[in-house]
Length: 274
Image 1: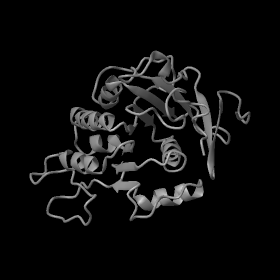
Image 2 (image 1 turned 180 degrees about the horizontal axis):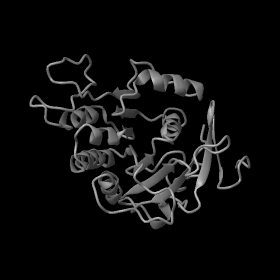
Image 3 (image 1 turned 90 degrees about the horizontal axis):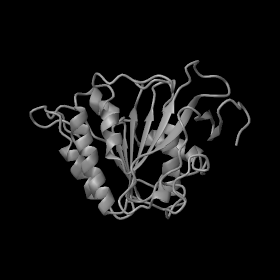
């Protein structure tokens, strides 16, 4: 199943056309009205199926493995069994230190003094990192909502990315971006902390940004949202022609979710699917 990369391709000279190049960072932002889970499912399916890569999923959203098992089975890529090392589910916990957590892959987000800390999550993630892995930091906005600063989160992402590059792996970060304007003609304000995390992640460069947003008019029967692609600064060792293709925000692709796939088509064509 590669229903996105035929429309939002990665560099053709990379070793994999269905995943970002090794040592790169893909940022996926969405809105609450148009969640970007489908994009993550596509990449996960490609990694586990076609690419046979190890996946390390850091579940800041708290979705749980069962939800991914149900969805991936429906789209034709069942998750490996719990005993397999090819899929690691890390579920950081925000529970107080007085409450015990049951598994080794449940690092605490607050230390013994109830101060926010991503040290345990970083150490747990790195303990599973091997060559050519796919690391997914899923739901970074949730960290912001429970008290982490944009600086703390971005430092964590930068530290993980440094290790990802050393292991020739791939990093994917997901977060909400409801503060961004839906119209490309509106210049977003530069005040406040709401957009600081996304700005910090984008400034890291060395990858690509998929921006998923809802329509100003709301969902319809044919169109659920829009997606555009924005290359960031190139990764170390990549040539200029290896940068990801660009899909402008002023002329984005539109999509509609279906029971076991997603349809992607040019803006304004409705049911004229590619």
